[in-house]
Length: 358
Image (cartoon, rainbow, N blue to C red; front, top):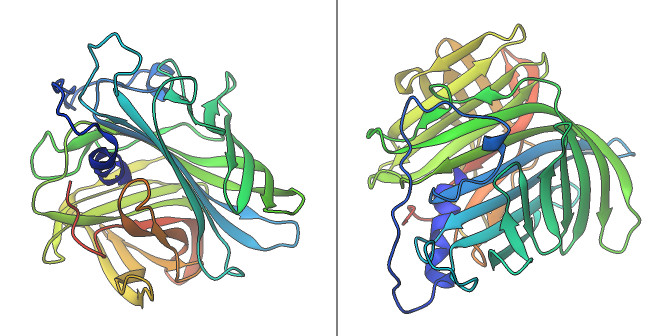
C-alpha cells in the first residue's frame, strides 16, 4: 500500500529538470502465478515496489517496542534502455522507525538515493535491497537479515520464517480500486521469529526478541483519482493466525475500496470483499505538529468478525517529507477480539494531513 504514495512522490524532487523519454511499465494483471524465490527479488519493469517489515520487540527489561523498516524501489520511467550507468532508472528509498512509549513519539530516519554505483540497489534473484549501510536481504535458509544504522538507533535483526507465505487478494493479485489495473502483486510473511540487537545512540547494543510481519508488493498503477488515502493493518494473531485488512478512502472520508484476508489458527484462509470490510473509528488523536486528526483506535469488521485495534502510543506520526514527501501515521498496535487480547501488529493511515496527490 504505502509505496504507491512513497515511491511516486519522490520523483519530482529527484529526477533531472529536463524531461527524458519515458518507458512503459509492466501492468499488473490477474491470473499471473507468482514464482519463488524469483518473486522475493526486485521487479524493475514495474513502477513501484517495497519490502515492508513491522514488528514488536521485547527488550531485556521487559519493555515492549514497535519497529518498522521499509525499502522502496521506484522506477523513474527514464533511462531503462540507456546503456549509461548514470541513467536514472530507479530510486531507492528507505525508512526506519522505533516506537517506544518511554520516548513519547516515533524515533525515525530516512534515506534516498539513485540506484547504482555500489551505493544503492535491489537484486532481482532474491530479496537483497540496500541503501548505503542500510540493508535487507534474504539468506538461502529463508531468514531475512536487516541492518539499519539510523540517527538515533541501530538495528541488527534476523527474521526466521515459521509459516508459509500468505498470498493476498486473488493468488497474489490484490485490487486497490474499482478498475482492474488499480492493483498490485502482494504477498505477506506473518509470524517471522525475530531476534537480534537494538542500540540507542551512544549506548551498548541490547538483545531483543519478537515477531515480525513482512510485506512485499509491486505495482505500476496509481490509486483511483478519487482516493484521498488509506488505512491498513497487518496483525500477527496470538493463536498463530494472521489478519490483513485495508480500506481506500475517498475525499469525503467514505470507503472507495476495501479488502481483508484472515488465515486462522488451523490454516484456513478467508478473503473478504469490500462490502464485508469496514473501519469504524473509536478514538481520535490530533497531531500537535500537523493538526491532522487520526483514528488511532479503530474497530475493524471482516464479515461477522470484529477486531478492536488500539495503539501502543497515540503519537506515531511519521514525517517523511525529506524522502517521500508525505506525513502519515504508522505505528504499533494491539488487537482484541470479543474483549480478549488477540494479537500485535501495525496500523498505517495516510491522507489525513492532506489528500494524496500522486
